[in-house]
Length: 263
Image (tube, rainbow, N blue to C red; front, side, top):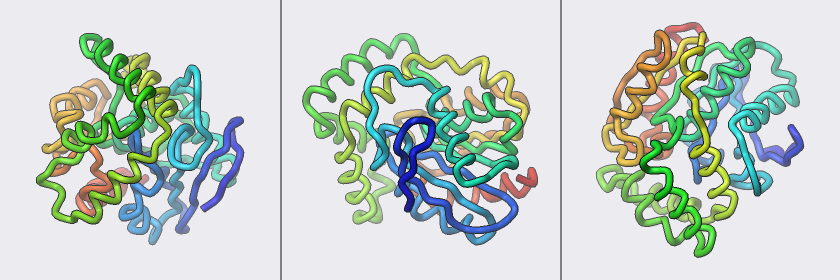
């Protein structure tokens, strides 16, 4: 693991593997680079893999005030610059990590070869926004424990808890989030409007829906795919935190897609 200062913020990151291709992994809201622990090694056998704690998450610098997807995408560009990765990269992201990956692809077309996203959180429906912001205010005041049971029930379906140690480790790590940073990232999502981004994406895109995802049900994931010219859409038996819950299924999906488009 490395700690570096990039784009004006301290970020924890890891670059592993070797090869001509690079894959950037972007974790979900409430996650960290550990969300990819069982995915990254599979790709590091044949390519460079960059994973990191997004600003406000894990052990990266915490955030306050206004945050935008532009800033999150610029963080990735700064990380690539730090490691001297000048060519095009593929990106894979889950939930809000999917939104960040897609926005990077729209903002840095010349640096993106392909994108694979699982249950991408590209915004919050207007009718849900007020309730979501009210919930965030309660989380900031009371801490992450206020939301953990609902978040796990909807995002980590009981059907996927066969490996109870894996589930408990994820739940406990989720509880360690900084409530104010978590709320800041949520507010970024609430303010996001990605329709223009999606419509002008030029690289190959795969959208993955999770049949057991109760946070971003499959119709929402499929609607994102339909908004992207030429995007592929698949569904797998997984939930919202799919990199943790079903790393084998997700890895196979991403690997097959990247190989098919030569990324």
